[in-house]
Length: 567
Image (tube, rainbow, N blue to C red; front, side, top):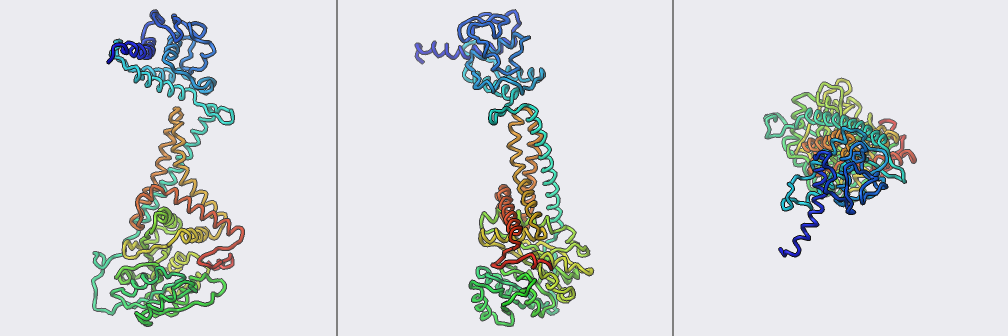
């Protein structure tokens, strides 16, 4: 290094380092040695006991710009510390940032942060060659800013500074809200684990729970499939049904006024498999007081000849022995009704964001863990796979009893538990699969219809449920970020951040647990608040439309409140 530049660089570095070395020495040196051979930034000497009224370059009007912990008139060492800080080049950016009320106001905290300031200055010795001025000054400046923020936390809004009482009140409310959300999501998580663990898997033909085949005649099963504008998936669904093994099967498809190519697909399949195995019926008129799907099912079951009737949808895919395994379970346990959870499959990332959370909320609302007990009176049904004993089903009045119910699957499960009926709920895992929606629009309107029906077609309850979902999903994340400045200022932010963080993690764990029944990417569980916003928006839309018009739209049809009187 050039010798001509070395003294200048060392002098500049020494000037900064010496100022911060003074900070440490002033705090440690006896009072009788304070101020000797030290100069402030203007060249004047700082003598022992010098305050804002003394000192060569120190101005009295700048004294209030420093934190209270540095403005103790009874301690001259504090004033020398301020002078040393001034020589290091630190300048308060705004008087409001340092002066006024709002400080901690406790000697204990002053001593604590003063100690942290002293510790922030590295003791590198008094030799010039051993000092690292740039690093030392940077650390001490940062520590002083932290001290300033913690001692005088202020917030400016329209020229008004919030005082410490308002901040403390906000901190207390944050802790209460975060704790309430944490407890609420913890209860939801416990319910999810109980529900999923309560439902057994549907035994497979190769599993240990299957019944070995016998020489008896195969059971006769009738499958009723209502269809409306299902040209995109009905062929695959019917082929999986017509290729079932171990049962004598007939498939009855009721075309509910389709306007796409669904009739053409059905005619082609009838020509391939014959009308004895595949029977297609057309529904022309809808009687008043009936939901279209329920009337289609009622028409189909009237032509069913089997001892067992399976109600399924036109987009559900069945394993080669799924129907046989279901009949085996019903025969072995003497059941009147068996509902099987199909595995939901998401075809896009948007569906993966919404459908798992919506399915989880549906389970929390309607699926009771006690429904797994065949002797319990708590029944439920699952869209996609509901198998009933034909004589027990007709004894209870068929779908005519639930003609006005939008949630016909659940209503069927409740109906089959009447009069000491026996039923249970199982998980199909991979034997029954379904992709319920094919587009964002279809998913949005499907959720809108379902949410309104879940709350008894009440616009008020649907709106309250939507707002509750938004608060429960978004508030924990908001509180986590809101607690950071409180923690930074020493106002108990950690007590609010900890339960809020748990309230964020609990629903994620619940969704990951639900992956045993739903197929989606784990990343979707991390972004569940986005799915919650979509569901809440759909619910609010449904509540608004129903409150204004009193109607519900689904599959191109409009239903009024009079159509729900028999639900």
